[in-house]
Image: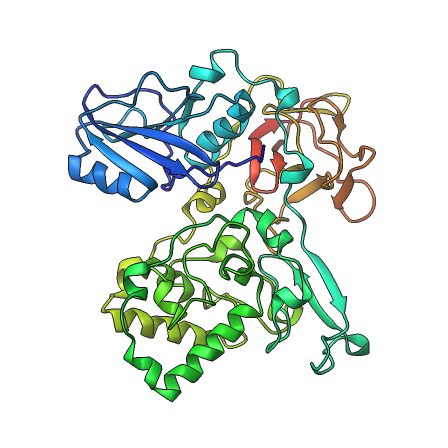
Length: 456
């Protein structure tokens, strides 16, 4: 079973981890989670929910049905409960429904890390907890690292810009091939799909059904074709071309009939114009990415100002004020990780006298020791080695994830790779000084983030 941590109902940046639930029930919502491939039921509690608000929240989910004043059915197997915004008057209690206890670990992690909620172990998962030795990301579900691929140009295409006339591209969600070429012709989409970015979702069918008189304007059509060409050169097309996606595109898709931009929702247009902040997704520098970057536009482009202007014009065409999206984050579940406030370690977590390292949460594929106050590690290509990193060890996709107590500071286990420092031993830890330990089941899936005092 694939490890899936983003739950459909978990779209906000809730930070309250209480399990306290108000007595006032507003209603419940039956829905389907396209990420976990599981049905779910969500109950809405508290006086800050109105029935209309709860129904709107419900209808934002896939295959949903809202039941005012009713609890979730009691005779259906469920894994446990995720209490989001517990202790407030606006609580959502999400019950992922399954009889498969192997999904306990992923749903608990998704609740705590991405929803900012509190996981209640009951139902199928019972009160037995999760065996940390069985909690890890398997090879088939692992985050595939970015890799540079160089090959001969396709027959009929001009020589590439790299040595020997080759065409080089980063196989990555953020990678782009040379302008005028297609990403999918030179790199597999498997890497992009593994990097936590893909799930099928319907396009904006209401807008797609409308006639667009601009398609009779040659100047507009030329600009539309340029935007499409820029998108098709980059890894993001993997999720936005129905011919490439395994289970259907994520909202809009470049091969849609008519004007493919009609498939964008307003929030997607704001994302593409970078009105909603997209920096949390990471970004290659243009000199490393065939001239493409997205520090100004949300979609990578060789001319970011032009790309940004195009999507701002699309918002204007729909009569949408971009300012309503200003200050908002394009991917809240990742921003929650970036802004996570690291607290003190508990129990035996940290580096021991003999250098042995312990953490909680299961076996890991990525490990850091950082200076206290360092930014939280995020994803590649530019956010995964924050300033202040003292030591980083990665386990490759086919490697055996590391158990707590198996790692010794400065010693790289067989099958693992020391990413930082590139050569030699890491800096010695100073007795009495605080350090940040970050242990992750995989990229963007932390299990332990805390501050310990080195006290040999």
